[in-house]
Image (cartoon, rainbow, N blue to C red; front, side, top):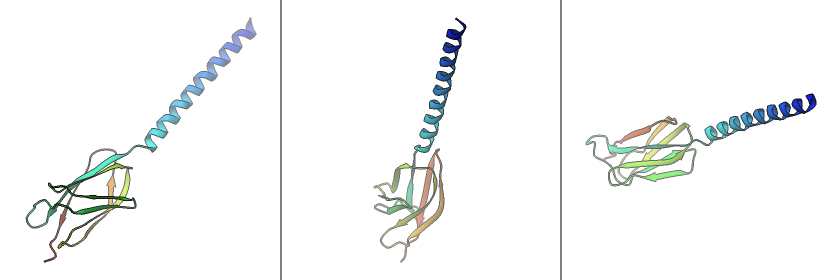
Length: 117
C-alpha cells in the first residue's frame, strides 16, 4: 500500500513538472514569433502635403511598400528590433532613417521629404 501511494505521488509530481515546462516553452516560442506593424506617412517637407507612391523600404528585410493616396504606408509582420528605413520618390531627395526602433507597441513614423528642385 505504501509503495502504491509513493508511485501515484511520483507520477503526479512528474506530470505537474512536465506541464509547467510545456507552458514555459510555449511562452518563449510566442515571444520569439511576436510581430508588430510599422506604419506612418510620407509628406512634403515644405507644404506638409501627403506624397502618393513613395517607395519605402525596411532595410535588412525584403519588405518594400508604396504610400497610398493619403501618403500612408504600413509594414505588416515586423519583428521587434532596430532597422534602417529608406524613402525615395521622383524629384525628391532620398531619405534614410537609421536605427529606427520597432517595439511590440504602437510604431508610427512620419517621414518628410525635401524636394530636389
